[in-house]
Length: 311
Image (cartoon, rainbow, N blue to C red; front, side, top):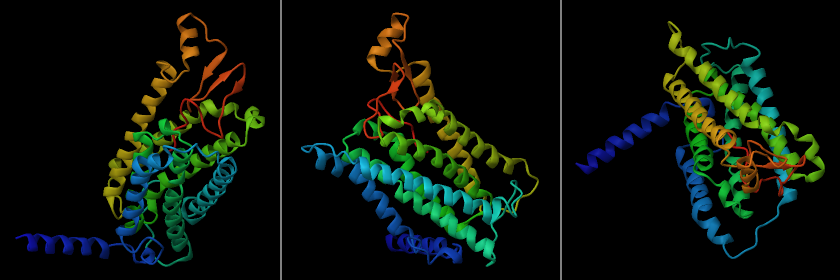
């Protein structure tokens, strides 16, 4: 009985792998889900167990230089990804409604395959966000939402790229990359030190930008439910994208509510000032930082009381 179940499971597994887009099978990390799953499992073990134990008796690393390089490198990578998405379909042949995957070997179709894989690969690079937190002992920033997003996104996108590298399912990847241009630029300037604080006046809009992202992603996927017919190859992925956009909109809306309405992320001095009817010259911002007398308190690009949520 167990042998038969195992045989059926292996047959189903082989069926899943054989149904993937042949054009992407030879890309790094795309031969099967094993390597990808091992990377993400190692990531989770490190950030939850191994990393905190390693740093328990050590002083936090500063890492200012590496963080500046990392953040601006991610800006450059995100710009390139957005450009490639636009030029491989979204500004050329796509109609922004029902766009199936171009399964041909045309230069434009192969270009979309490459950028879809590159977006997936960028998700593995972004695991360094949490590694920096652990090495700098910013344990309060390693939240469930942060870990869930950084592990769930690359795992699901691996399957998405495997079957549908392009088409209307890639819209959320392009929008996400646009948001990351803004976010990593902010983090890069923040990590550079106090002299750049005057250029970060727009930080309070970061959470709003992320909420707009989820609205756009969900609305674009919602079109599918109102079309008489749509030839997108794997509709299941559109359902998952809609769920993803809606789910994270709720989570980030709760973050906004807690930070701005209830003021739970305000420093104690500010909360006391609020109770006394004053704000003591401090203003909360979406990433958990606060301003006093017009200047922001940063520590190597991160906040003492939280951070802008990445998505």
